Image (cartoon, rainbow, N blue to C red):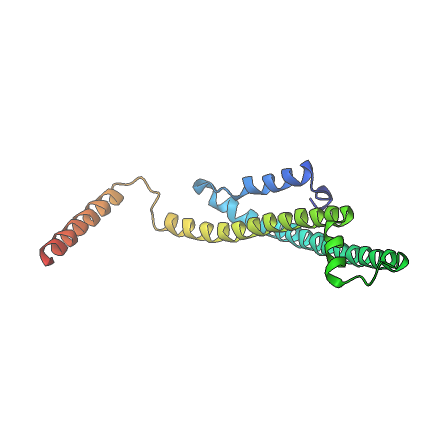
Length: 171
């Protein structure tokens, strides 16, 4: 899957959608979900790390580009002998430079990608907890179709009604 995620285009979105679809659990196939969970989590974590790396690269590119633009502005200002360029004026020119805007946009897109992979990573961590919870419910007979669960429900309902009545009398 690593070769699929190279750009922020359709391939990237389809990879994210692919993993989003894998978050869903089938309570009747918990054994399969438990088996595939470590591999899926690892793949998502790797994509998250790669997205972070791309973001760091975009941030570094923006920083270097800003320094080059600032140097170019100062040089042009000194050659024009138009007085001294203040840091505020230089910063304003850098922030409105088309190259800066393009690089800042690329950095923002990389940040959005990191955030999407981070959310997926958290979702897969939550998926693991849900596999454990559903497995516990299954082991406790929660999904069984036997009559004993309806008897338990009747006792639970009777206890709840008694509790409500006690609260009512206490007021």
